[in-house]
Length: 321
Image 1 (tube, helix red, strand yellow):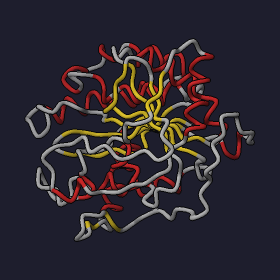
Image 2 (tube, rainbow, N blue to C red):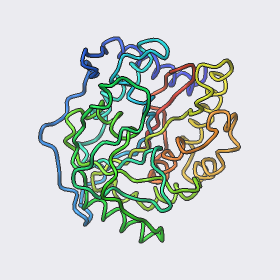
Image 3 (cartoon, rainbow, N blue to C red):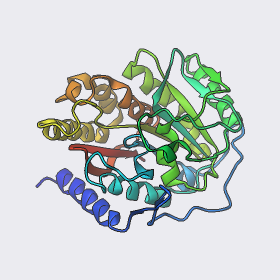
Image 4 (spheres, rainbow, N blue to C red):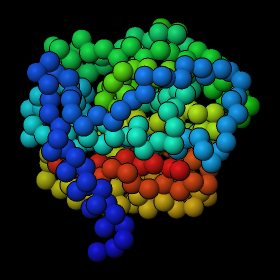
């Protein structure tokens, strides 16, 4: 077995072991195995850059699978009840793996596309329940994280400096690509959270460029998160052949993310040439949040931090730095 395969097997086995401690509460809330979250949260995200020691507080960037709808907060019936437990267990321990408590979370979700990259500017964004056909209680979930208007201005300034026009939206809510996984990782909702849209047209190079423009935020205590799925073919879940296709694409994705920055960018820009690319992503909106995370990574290489299987396909999360 190769070192890469051994590493992925270790991650999967570790996640599965952690999942043994996971239970779903009667009220629909995921419980058990939570990483401790500091009550003393940092709410200052000023428009001016904050000065920090890179070695001590530079944030990594992340690409995570956000699961299926409100999957972590319900009794799952579209497959084994524990389908999403390993991913939930990994999300719970995520905060403890960071170099410091983030000053803010900047999330690019697969579920928002705009003509221009657009930030949510509301100081208290609502939740947008953009999923359908799930239990009633999942439409009453709460995750009242404060918004980050100052960070929104900072993001727009960085994009402008890079020659990337942007916009803002003061009314839209945080969609489930944001609040569902983050409610598991940071249940107390104390960290200011800003959502940034994808850019219509879904050009991978454009999203890599967005990430490059936003890279300075990492030294300001901002955690940049791409929220999507490494496999997203709604007709492929639970189908014969999908597991093998997802595994081939996932191996390619791991190798591309682990490559030196220039090679990584070239590979991700041409992702359509990857094995089983369109079988895994008939439409690429769930892959493009990874491009933003990779673009912001600079010379930091990527590595797989979660590998597991759900609904008959391979899923993975990646961390840069």
